[in-house]
Image (cartoon, rainbow, N blue to C red; front, top):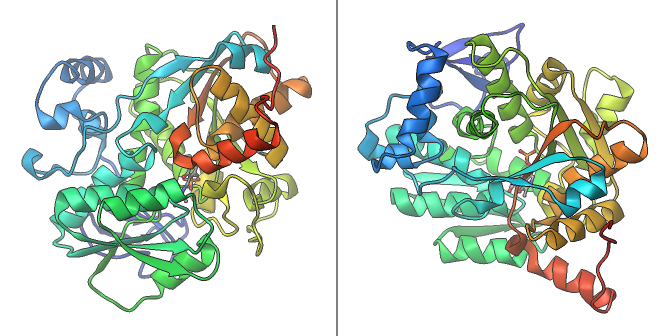
Length: 408
Ligand code: F0G
């Protein structure tokens, strides 16, 4: 296993544990090149399920039980884990009706230790940080990455610094980062400015744990592996996911490509990425067919988790969407609000950014682009309790009524 530059024209390779943020030749992002597993797919599928019945710490993690397709090997005692992953697929009942789908499933990544999918990447990123002897770990964040980084750094006994857009993140997420003991750096500007500020710091002791870190991407791959396992390896028609900095989209595409290449599946589900209309540079790129993304300088949306104008992983994400034959779309804040309300009324709940998925499906349905018999997995990225202010304000405005009508 080794690191490789994501730019196919450069393809510079490095040792797996080389401590660099980007390709030293061309500055593009790096990716982990995973070796084909030794065992046959059928044997590995059985072993992954068997590990769910084991009490060993590495097996209890819904990330590390798939370690055959992850970087390593690490000493099992050195893993920084909170038993993340193993999140369910929940059948969408009222939400299924609202999207005109009989087989809508939510993969709820909000039901992870810190309430968000970031834990899946952080367990791998933090384990690698410890492996290379890092003392300080840091990230810029719209809130969730900071909460996750703070928790896993605490477990690894490393110092944590989180760069946050001042006044622009949910207080629930800020409270988590404080609770887990991170140093908070408030940045006057949005997420993009916070990430720039962090990446420009000259402190050589800092280990970066944003999703530009290829080890984070590896952990987030397990969402697709676990989803396929939960569907008994029957490939769904669509996987629909929110898009912000586009690390998750990159991870999902990489996972699907590897699963196909190594013989676990014979085709990939179409990957649909949904952005908020006020923070939609990736959707604009898709619509225009341009070669390069045009960052938006004033991203704005109620879904603060994806209030991002300059997504760093757009090249990887574009490759993922094209590889699967999927597409990119956007939805308004009103559509996000209605979808979030419906997900709540289905007894599931999620934070605003996650509701872009159902909003996107309803938009597809209204345009006649969704077949009732399709099997769809919508990725819910964050827990309802991640942004309680949003819920209370929305309902105060409506004087207790719900935003959306549940279809009968
Ligand atoms: N949903 C939630 C709840 C998020 O927190 C994020 C990203 C996304 C979706 C988008 O995922 O960036 O991989 O496309 N949150 C980051 C953070 C940026 O700092 O917490 P992406």
